[in-house]
Length: 284
Image (cartoon, rainbow, N blue to C red; front, top):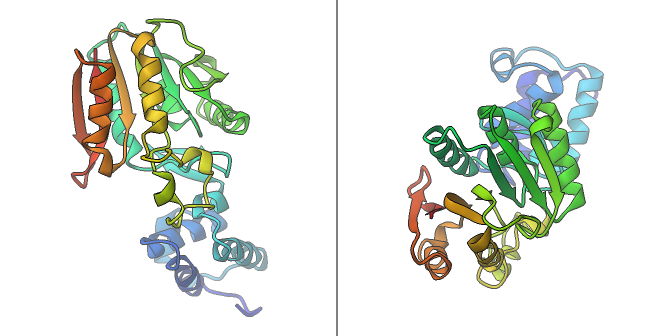
């Protein structure tokens, strides 16, 4: 990049070339990045390729591209990422929200709509707080307890609760999954826990780019899921629901682990939009 005023079209192409080394949606990600730097809607970026960046905008683009070349994920560069139609603060303290997790939120909301009397839910391993904050925003009568073992993640989740004006209905606990909860106290438990096997994780591009604590699921990827199931056995209320996001490869192993703990429960496996196993649903 030279010192002449660069056009939006040129900046998009530069960003796309950098991003394609790390993303399957490089063109879209380049648009998102430019929209962020220019403080314009993405549609504006697309229809004004001839517009020129200011010097400060070019400097911001250079700095962002340098971080991207180093392997920093785009959401961390932007400082925010969208989930269920809302923008969430993100950072290396927690996993970046994924579209797959929106299926868990939708399943929880469907269940809650049919049970308007339910007033309490828990989010174990809350991370950014995207699940808890979204449920609170969508269900004004619901109170949530968001637990995480990471103080840094809890700080980020609190910011997101304030950002979306639901902090008064969220309680944040530093806890190992469900250990802080009383027996039979939770009608609804949601969790998107680390589920990537350790050996697999170390071969993935995401390794080292997002917090290992939020990705590493142990030898077979089910270590934390088994622990949560064991804790949920005594903490899930009668007639309650437990929702767990799983890896596509755990379509047999995760339900098998759940049946050992909840032999009388109704256990369903729900697919994502690609048809892969994604959500374990346990109804007692």
